Amino acid sequence: MKTYFHKNPFWNNEEKTEAMSILAIEDDNGNVENRQQLVPQLLNGQTNPLWTKLMEEVGPSIIDSNTEQRRKKKLKERNESALKRRQQDKSKRLEELFSLKLKAFEIKEVRECSDKKLTAKIRASKSETEMNAWISVVLLKSYENESKEEN
Image (cartoon, rainbow, N blue to C red; front, side, top):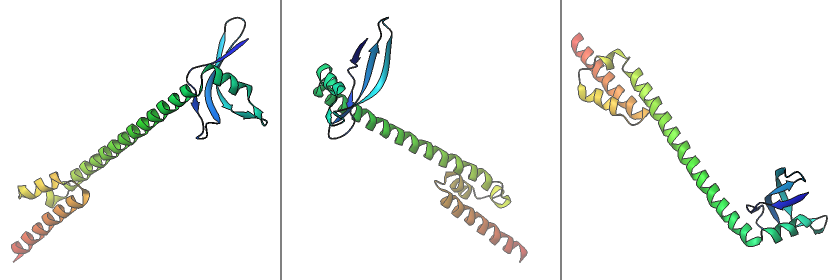
């Protein structure tokens, strides 16, 4: 049986007393089993033999390099994930606003409003509050027109 470490370990803590690695275990038939292996520097108060083997096969400078590359990769993934989430949230808000605008035109006074500037303002609204303000103007104008017609 032969064991060896892949060349991609990284530090598991800031103190650099633990490394995470892939340990390959090759049996006599040539079958290889890869498993993730936490390698602490000390085991039961003594130097861990796997630690010694890891430092000889890979070395701390490669582990430092791998750790930095991994940190950068994880940071990039977090940033991309956050950007994607913000874009999805923005898209969802726009869909909801569009739906509200459709509902606004179900209101008789809004649908029948002859002032194209006001209906354009409703359609161009960037927020629900802005849209509601323009709907209020349309309703107020409709109410004023009704009052004039009654007199």
